Amino acid sequence: MKFLFFFLFFQFSVLNSQIKLSDLDDFRSFTKPEEKSIIETGTKFCNDFFDENKNIVISNKKNFKNFFLCKFSKKRNRFYIYMLSYSKEDMKSIKETCEDIIVNWPWIADHMDENFKYQDKDYLKGFYIENIFNNKILNFKNNIKQDNRLINNEIDNFILENRDLFTVDNEKNNYLVEREIKKISKVYKKILTRDETNLDKIIKTQLEKIVRYKIFVNDTKNFISYSCNWKPGKGLAPYVKKEKFSEFENI
Image (cartoon, rainbow, N blue to C red):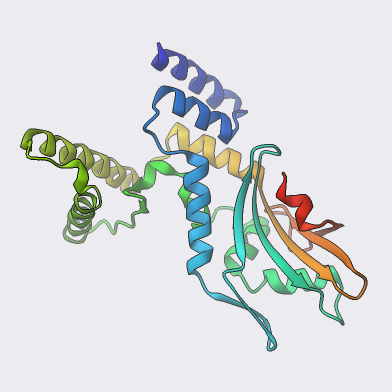
């Protein structure tokens, strides 16, 4: 019954492309409670990406590390990639200050350009959970020797990280390993064939609708807080509005 309900819902949503990621998570948790959350996985991968990637240097005097964060708002159905909080440059407008920040991060700046919409955004890859094994986005090379080595390493890592699941029951142990081998083989085939599943299509469509960028800027001389806001594909010039981060926290 669960399967039939989910199948009908899934087919309807593919035709209409109206399902939200939060709705999809709810249906997945209903039909397959063991499945990963698309939103939680995507948000974690996004934050991990910015946590691991590069300092941002705005000027010779100011250096920020790990400053972009990722947050999903179920209330607004938005996925925000944001930075807080930067003090306005004395000789620049809020808009100019924000543009100077964003161009230092080309993987974000490219997302503002309509011509680069086709490019994969590494920090959003965590939403495509069918490409993930053992909490990793795998990078296969279509080289049998290298790929087999990677697969074997990942299976070994799975066994090590989940050693509490293994017992003296070898039949059960073999089942656990074979199940993971089937999972990683499915990921391997999907990545090499560049197959786009219905789930991928829904996620891609929704991300195109909901991703937004924000930078919070403080005008310390006038005691006013602003935010610069971008929508992908709409250019580098931000929409600027008065907004405190405390107002953003509750979305």
